[in-house]
Image 1 (cartoon, rainbow, N blue to C red):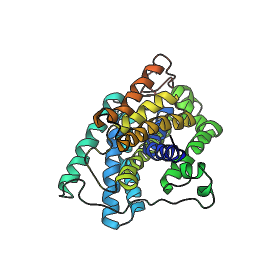
Image 2 (cartoon, one colour; image 1 turned 60 degrees about the horizontal axis):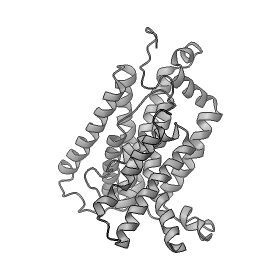
Image 3 (cartoon, rainbow, N blue to C red; image 1 turned 120 degrees about the vertical axis):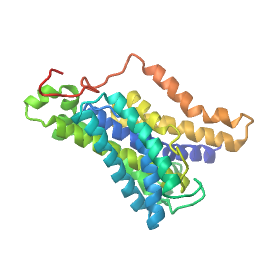
Length: 310
């Protein structure tokens, strides 16, 4: 491979990994508080459509991102209400959110827009090369020649790590995820912490979905996420809920996406259907590698009640 091809492949890896990483970070925060959200794919779909609609109506992609963030947060409120207040089974509630996301995004695209998906282009996020840094040979094009949302997502990794492991609020989040009864006894508001983490996590998932329509395609197509929400969930398992490990996992899947696009462009004779399977094959291999080594918070997926033992 030439240096130009390797540079292009690695730059594409960073770009393709962005929505998966952002959604995974949202789930890391959520699961650290003891709530499992399997509705990532559905929330990303809702965020993708809302981001598209916001940019379409205003001509401003950042307004679209704001709408996607709010939409994701609202779905997070719904998920939190079912899982925390009603104490519903978190797996079933998450799957319900996933189905809701598919149905709602499809309904809105066909009813509200009244168009054939993929026929209207919108203003999207433009590349914003960082002065000086983008001119660094090799490294510059890989890391410093993207749109702003890519930079913000990468910046969120150390920020979330610092919050979770270096601050009092992070200690409370992890305590709630490990032993909510002890945390409650010490004066930590278990329900508030879980609500906030679920809502903020879902908001990040909504923004992750909007990246696909505003940062990649600049249009809307039904089920645009194409399983990326499930890839994000796999990254959470792979990373054991550590932000920096989630970054590495996202880059792994991003590389799989980038590689299959580059191989298609090179026309090497492999049917494109097999190349499209590459990210999901990597997912299966990754999950097989972590079977039996999962280290989830002790109270993950277990509703908390002051009246009943956990």
